[in-house]
Length: 117
Image (cartoon, rainbow, N blue to C red; front, side, top):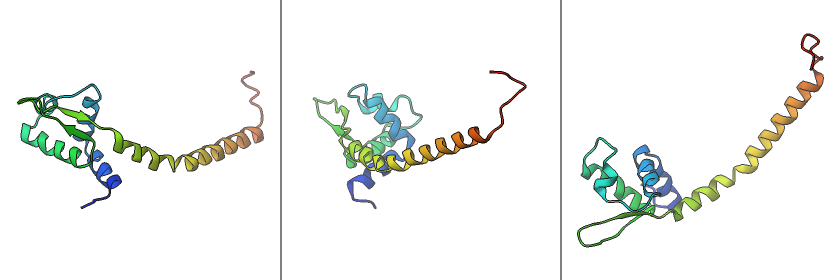
């Protein structure tokens, strides 16, 4: 099982239910019952997802009497962002090459006489 923080974060984000839970938590703290409402699954099944998110450091669980609110902790997402930013230079260079290629194609194309500009 992955133990480095980035791998734990990616593993937690790999599931669409967990991504939906994180999206809901951007609106503020919520209980397991509130988080399970949009899904056709039991509270214990949602709790399993929450344990994965908690292990990855993406959520924290508080205790307020009997209410155990879950809150988003987006700190691990910063590592994901920094990792992905490493590919930005690659993407930018690819788009520049595509722009250059399209400009070259347009420069070598004869003018369209049927449709005046």
